[in-house]
Image (cartoon, rainbow, N blue to C red; front, side, top):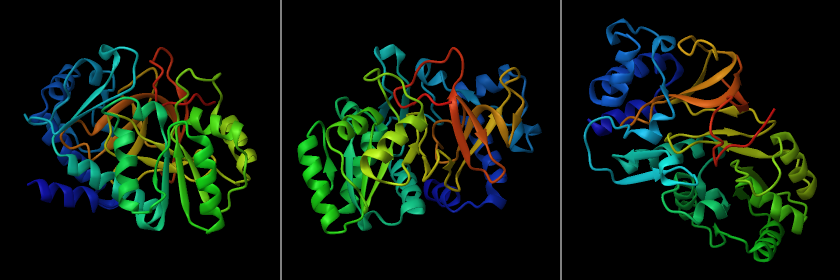
Length: 326
């Protein structure tokens, strides 16, 4: 059944998304004790679910307090969010690691083409310094898949990174510099250079290392320092297995098996497909966890399905992977 699920998830198109989402909802209701208990507490009968707006979204805080598992299994890997104490971290138990790999590789390829076309450089010091980071795992696999001799991670080796980027630019090598926000800003302060063949992608994350800056300010600094027209961004989180990408102006697009919806701040069960509100995410690849997550982010969803992150909900924890925006 595993391969059949994978095929259905990663080949889904808009016309079939709703029916597959409802099928996965019923599978998770039957096999996920936490999600089933939450759904029952809301007095929702799965048999009455006929549309996406009726599906209950599990509050993301449950990943800190409960094992959110669909079916019983011994996890191949456990991802943990950043946090100051173990009890304050979300945990994502992976039944099938290959499902995550297929999700992030297909997602990357959809937006950026084959990894082998790129030299991929990771500037993720805070994530490499701790184990079980889903972001570090993903970037490591993309680096390996690129098979480029200069692909790799850099901690605080800014002089070496500067030298590598100069050489790659001279050879007109298409390069992806993917980094946590504070590290990209640190590097930009020390080394300014025009980049014509390098795409800069920030993943969020100030971690208290600098004064908080809104996303637009961060992007303006990086554009000025590196002479580029736009800064790309990745939107993902420990609790998900899929990522959305922005190529300009903080407007994100999802792969076909992922969708962002909104809930009303006053009435969390009122879900809508566009406008502004609190962000709900459907991640069909999250098959053995929960595919329907109510995040702590506030956002805007456009009519074409693209979305923007507008900030954090009041009273929510500041995530290591988030960046304050307006």
